[in-house]
Length: 384
Image 1 (cartoon, one colour):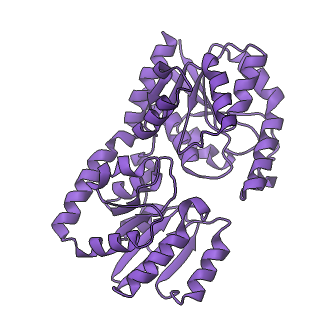
Image 2 (image 1 turned 180 degrees about the vertical axis):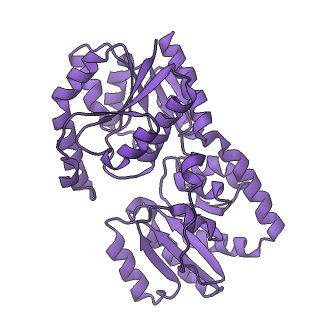
Image 3 (image 1 turned 45 degrees about the vertical axis):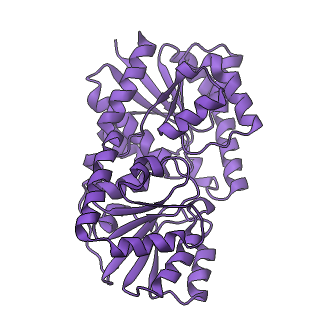
């Protein structure tokens, strides 16, 4: 009998969680040989843009509402995004109760706005078996700890995308530690990553440094610009391209203009095919204050790019094998990234290739196949 795997992951933006959910669902459809059927819950239109991709891969989408409310919701800013999540949760209450009751013999994977399905499961004694997927660097404040402790008895398993996070969650003793498991995210999907490489004329300098992500405090692009500005005084042959949109864009633009580095820095905004830029760049830099676990590092490694990254929690240090697969610097430390730029510039071709090979091997655990095999083991335990 086919068991449905239901994904609850109402994303506001196309961040790592968004793509890992899609790839996880695709991996189940592709590799389970009919044992499991993936279903993504589309509350108010948050998955509409990927509907064609999901249908092409035989991933079922369940819509709670025909009307697309999602396009009217604010996506950026802490308070505005919290308003949107609250709106999604409110819209979901009645249809989610009905849906989970109807599918009580299936398996539910929850990721984002997890309090709602957990609360409904407790209040209405819903029998559906549930997996909580934790990502990134969750702040273990009193509220979150209490919610998680409360949910311990009604969760079958809790998964973490990095081993560092796994150990942190276990040390916090919030859940029964036997329930806490390592599940690498489904990031590398060769069918979507090996798309046609676009031609463009953005990269004109001898050496190109690439950075990508939402223009938010988390990604720490102002620090990147400060360190790159210092590096330009030593090596003027480099150009920095930043891909992404976000609420911090005007502040970043003002810094570039004020410090007269416009000739060496290009803000490209959101691009559909990041791999075109990765294939034509020399170096990828991650300056984040925290990650979950660092999707762009893995995509850069897949594209054969050398990687410099902050040692922020949770992921980059693990992915780069403590610096063996690239260069790690102390997060947000003045001069640390500058020294990493200098170190990279001095590396021989053989030294760069050696580190890239180590990184390439290390990211193999993040393929959709490896993700499926790990997830399949968990699903079979629940289904036993």
